[in-house]
Image (cartoon, rainbow over all chains, first blue to last red; front, side, top):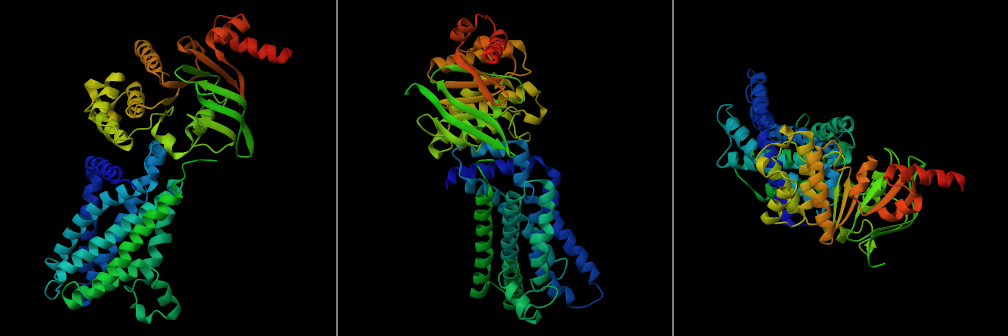
Length: 246
Length: 238
């Protein structure tokens, strides 16, 4: 690992992103718009959005970041820049960490906007500093989504394969994370599986943020699992990039 | 041995269950411009990718004294693919700066690389807005920026303006004079006139590898095209 190369890569990715205004706009606005839509859907069912909203705040950034990053290294592969980078002294993990860092910054801004809207316009109440805790959770899960997307993108060899990764990586976590059915009512097998899925910890942390009105030790432990999952995804992605082709 | 930048023995490359490259013995002499000539599809790129270390192979390939593909080599070998491999949504300078950062090159090396390929007046332009020839030069600058000891260039002059082609070949000769080894492929036989040494390839085999003068004398020819045909005919007769 070489911090200089990681930072140079993150800077390069952000420069490319800055030139793609449409993608930036979608990244920053999409979770907020979708949350607003859900708020509207639940308009006549009092209290339901107060429970679902915070959890969605954790799930939507995950999905949106995953979709964007899942094609990232494929673009490099197609342009030939991936092979070129692999002939330089750059470590493979530097490339993925650079991407991870760049999209982490995007995730933070994205979650800030979505959390602010949820706590104000969409009318979700949280005790004390619960809004702040929600923002931290939401940003963490956005970073995890970016990292998972990067893993999928390193793993996939073509765009066709990359788009298949969305149902494969995202939907199982979505079904089992506790949004549709609380995790303790999933049954022992599914509950056991959901214990291995980082998104479950994110949703727990979001729930706890609202209930406790601030960051607690339990939230910290949950987010550590999410962060660990993000790093593991990047490291696994780096090992699937091959310098040599058959 | 010391004056060989690349030394290959008993190399074989299989792809899709088919042998695409066989090399018994081949050396690239250090500090020369070596032309790798042969028709499209003869295995030039595969040979170059093997030397760079991105192609799996069997046999022995020694590059600058260490096995091909070993990680210290990535500081010393520059590789330019045939299709320009740079970021279209970055400017010329941003591309060269980024690839420079990957090899620890500073701002001076970036300016020098841009000057070498005559791109100093378009540094702030997006690569996507450049012509094909300019893009190829950005790709070249991104390899030059690390000041590699061994420079592997896959068809770097194809489709370029003759004036520019001449100036690039002069620049390559200067690099070689300062000790850099250049292995340059081309499917245009006429490019041989700019090379100190020639490697002729056909159907995944090396037909000949010699100094240009030596090859021409041995075959009684004065062009690479003639030498190429003579070598094939000699091979058929033998």
